[in-house]
Length: 427
Ligand SMILES: *[C@@H]1O[C@H](CO)[C@@H](O)[C@H](O)[C@H]1NC(C)=O
Ligand SMILES: *[C@@H]1O[C@H](CO)[C@@H](O)[C@H](O)[C@H]1NC(C)=O
Ligand SMILES: *[C@@H]1O[C@H](CO)[C@@H](O)[C@H](O)[C@H]1NC(C)=O
Ligand SMILES: *[C@@H]1O[C@H](CO)[C@@H](O)[C@H](O)[C@H]1NC(C)=O
Ligand SMILES: *[C@@H]1O[C@H](CO)[C@@H](O)[C@H](O)[C@H]1NC(C)=O
Image 1: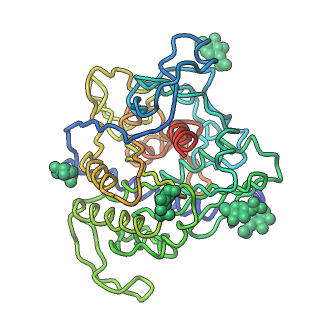
Image 2 (image 1 turned 180 degrees about the horizontal axis):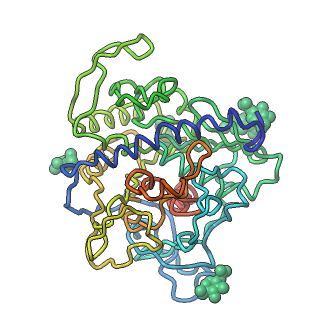
Image 3 (image 1 turned 135 degrees about the horizontal axis):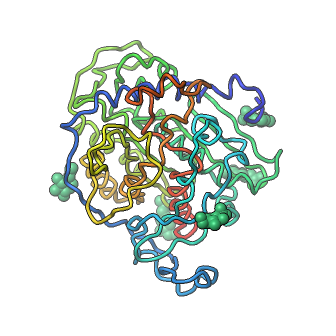
């Protein structure tokens, strides 16, 4: 199979499942959006320890260039801050310069008229992020394997990471391969692999291959079964996990009673989502404790990526659209925002990621910063199975605006800037 743009049929398979199955599921999810799942309580969690150095807030361009006065990274919560318009440093790459960017999230190519959403830089309150340096990151990843594991939001982030580093690699020295379960970006020069592994619940479920294409049935999970997936994670040097959006459809989730999908088992119980989310994360954390050598492998968990499905959440006059009209982030940070993110999942994830003793799990706390980014979603400018949203469909944003996934270049680039900071400075 050729690089993307070569033999299209296989190359598009993962995109197809994302587009054909996942998207409609999400769209449906927004119908099923359950008021009960919202919690208005707004809590901030400090980040875990960071051992190295980043620079303090910068006053002038000169300071930035010199990167003077390094402060310990652990003294700065890089996830608390604000968005600053900065068209000099952002976007980090241009849409048409990244051959690996699929039309799924290439919003400009798909006709999105505004581009301001690409130009925001994240400014932590107590320090500044160094300018993203792809070469430095690649040096750190030399001979190593970085793997994103999770749902289509993580696929979104993986694509961003590929685009952030790929321009430094001459053509012919980088390849993209897809299997049913994985997308694998290889950088020959550096002997580096940046992979995405599809496991929307982390544990086994019928949303995994080969059943995942059956988007009609509601997912059924096997909350204690993770080792089959885990086999593919063991040889990675950096593991980045997420799991959230697939949990938010209902207040209960289907759990396979016994056996496995390959044996044709179908009977299930329905159990509360919070109980199961915690059980699944504990299964996952135990697996990590037993199978990962923390001297070799760094582990990350990304907190949830928020959706923006009701403009009344941020509009003073109580708007009734989704995210499709948004061209700016929420910039008024004087009051807490509530865009319907289910913070109970967040708290469970914080608790479980803190509970391990043999391995350290770094919590990438991207939720709040992303909640401000109502402007960043693909809305009408993603494409599904190669099809753009039609003018007729645009009349029905409730059904057709995707306010879950993110345009690239865009917000996931910032998540990766923060991930890179950890990779470069703490490993
Ligand atoms: C990946 O794709 C490249 C060409 O695009 C091919 O040369 C290589 O053999 C493939 N690797 C695997 C493991 O399939
Ligand atoms: C950045 O924005 C300023 C002010 O809007 C504009 O004058 C300038 O040309 C822009 N620069 C780039 C690189 O787009
Ligand atoms: C490439 O990296 C892998 C580990 O990811 C290692 O096993 C292998 O020896 C490396 N190959 C070369 C040529 O450095
Ligand atoms: C990790 O490294 C430390 C210090 O070098 C060593 O004491 C420890 O046994 C190592 N742990 C494992 C699991 O190899
Ligand atoms: C998280 O842990 C704290 C302290 O043990 C506990 O009070 C809290 O209820 C836990 N939160 C969730 C959502 O499980």
